[in-house]
Length: 81
Image 1 (cartoon, rainbow, N blue to C red):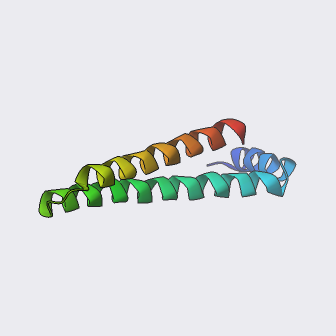
Image 2 (cartoon, rainbow, N blue to C red):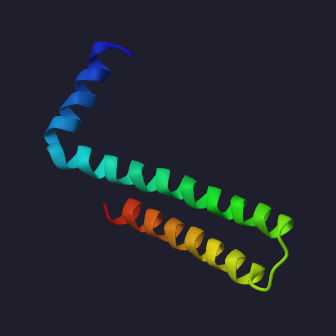
């Protein structure tokens, strides 16, 4: 990366103020939370294969709803921030 591109990048970050950094960190945090929600879905699938119970479908539905809501919030944050 040459110095001209770096200068443009730094000017954009400084010109946007500290809020650009805050917004970027917020979106990054939501992305990490999305990965956590994906892990919850995977763990609930493994649990449902291992343990047979009355509420397996409820747990599976809850994990997918959690993942979907997390994805929706991440998309809304990217659009509005």
